[in-house]
Amino acid sequence: MAPLAAKRGIAVSTDADSCSSFVLADRQRLKQILLNFLSNAVKYNREGGAVTISCSRSRPDRLRIAVTDTGAGIPEDKLHRSGRRSTGWERSRATSKEAASASPSPGAWPRQ
Image (cartoon, rainbow, N blue to C red; front, side, top):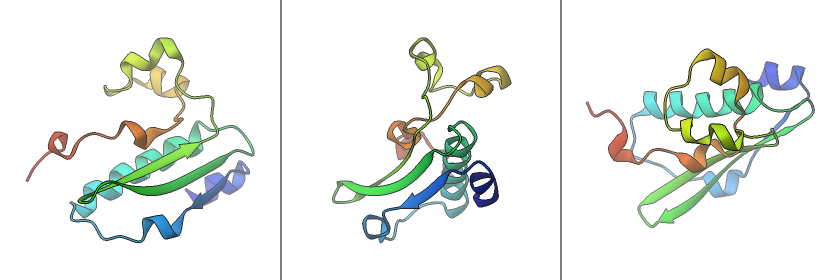
C-alpha cells in the first residue's frame, strides 16, 4: 500500500499507542481484512488525502480497529449495499469513509 499511497500523496498514519495490544484471531483472515480496508482507503481516497488507523477498547475483551480516510464516502443511496459483496461497478464508485466502523461481528467470520 505504501507505494500507491506515496504516488497519490496520501499520508498513512497510525495511533500506535492505542494499538499496542495482542488479539486472539485468525492471523491470515485479520491481515486480509485489514489489507482490504487499507487498500480501499487508499484507492478511493482523494489525491493528497489521509488514512488513519486507530484502535479502541469497545469492551474489556474486545479491540476495535478503525480505518478512516478523507475520501468522499459511500453515497447515501448506495449505503444499503455496503454489507454485501460489491460488483466491479459498485467498487469503482464507492469510497471508504470509515470502513472498519462497520466491521462484522466475530461470529460472522468463517470458523475453521
